Image (cartoon, rainbow, N blue to C red; front, side, top):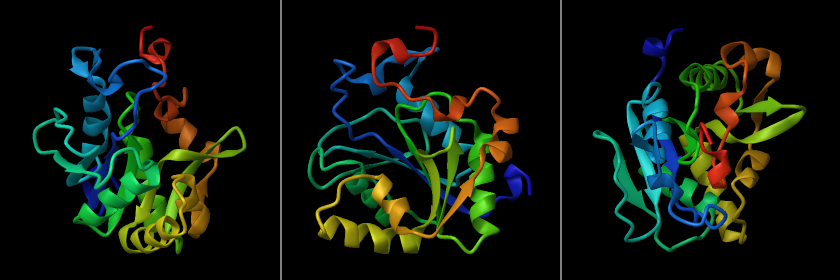
Length: 199
């Protein structure tokens, strides 16, 4: 199954954080001539027909053409709430979720997550790195993710990882995905200025 043969997929790019450690709005910082956020949005667009950026209320982010901008109901409720906002807005039965501060996502790895989910009976698929499950990126069935997310939020949960902890998961071992991304660039995110590519 090539990228062109993937099933219809929505993508959620989480852009609701405070950028506290970075010191300013990191998602607007230029990287190779484009805002940091655009790199993540364009990477997921390679595997998704429907791309959603989830931002805090009243924040008018610049997003690439064809990308939908949706807003959380309340500010800074945490990444699980942001993911739920995206899942509710998603148009497709499968979703891939990534962070807006992930500038080097490898579309081939995202496609592998989607294919692994489709081929399994699990409700989510994620990557393993150095023996640990990685929080982002991951793929999830929209219905199961929305149901679990609602229950978790009602219980006061805010951690994104709680969603995949709650669902049956297909874990991709490093040997499955690292040949597509030998340097594990897909997992890199930007928390501080020194994390920017080329910094």
